Image (cartoon, rainbow, N blue to C red; front, side, top):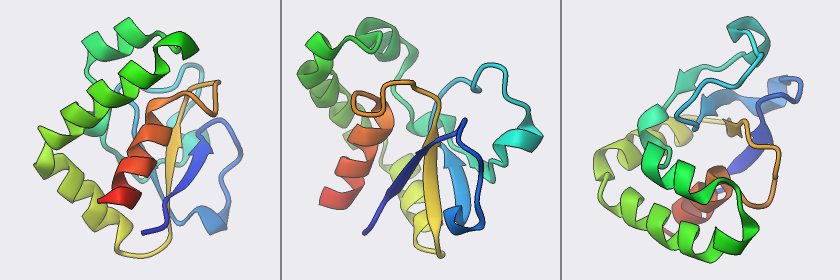
Length: 115
């Protein structure tokens, strides 16, 4: 399964296909029209506690990945919903984080690709 990632703040394009927001919180300062999100799957995002603990601190990256994968394992229904949406044609997982390397969407994409 190929998973495409894109910051939600980047301009949408037709190549994105279905745009799936994978953050628990709506991106700051972005209207729904500009975001062009087709599906907001907040339940797939890390829990508030994990997100706040991580705080996008690269020092915590390895542990964040381990904890988030454990949360995904414990949430098979939502993972299945996401896989179903991805199987219906071109789709892009969109996220709000500034750090394009250390964020939950990166972990999620790796998890989906491996499973």
